[in-house]
Structure formats: C-alpha cells, structure tokens
Image 1 (tube, one colour):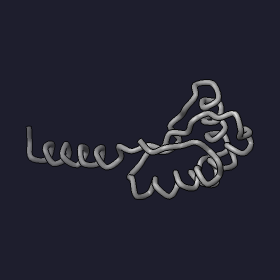
Image 2: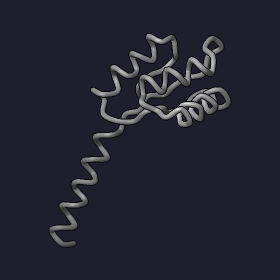
Image 3: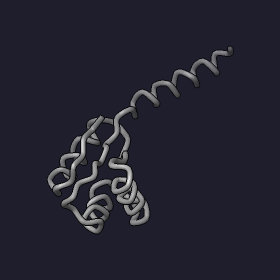
Image 4: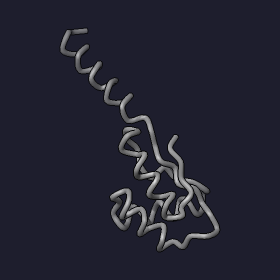
Length: 91
C-alpha cells in the first residue's frame, strides 16, 4: 500500500468516526403529520418531501433516523424537536 493510499484511508476513517451520532424520531399518538413535517423542515433543514417521508416512516415503523452528524450540532436540534413536543433522542 502506498503512502498516499494510507493517508487517504486514514482520512476516510477519521471522517466516518466523526459522524457516528444520529437523532432518532419516535412515533407518538399526539402530534399531527403536519406538525412533524413542519418541525423537521424548520429544525433539521429537511426539504418538505424529506420531512414527509420521515413522518411516514415514523408512523409505520415506529421510528426513523432524521439527522446524522457530530454531537455538538445534533444536541440543539434534538432539544428543539423535544421542545416542539416530539419524541426524539440522540444515539
């Protein structure tokens, strides 16, 4: 393996390790589809279509990963989801 290949592999590994957190949104019997979609668009910067697909997955599967990234960026987003009355956690 060449030095260039080793450096590229190390960079890819470091990038993958930095993005190993995700916000999982859980189904509930309280919030409407519109509220969930609007909140995902506002808080997670989803497109309307992406937020709608997540809402459908949450409804039928019980949960859906709505955002992945580094923990410092996810914490305020998860807090905003919780403040909006949604059920979410960072895993």
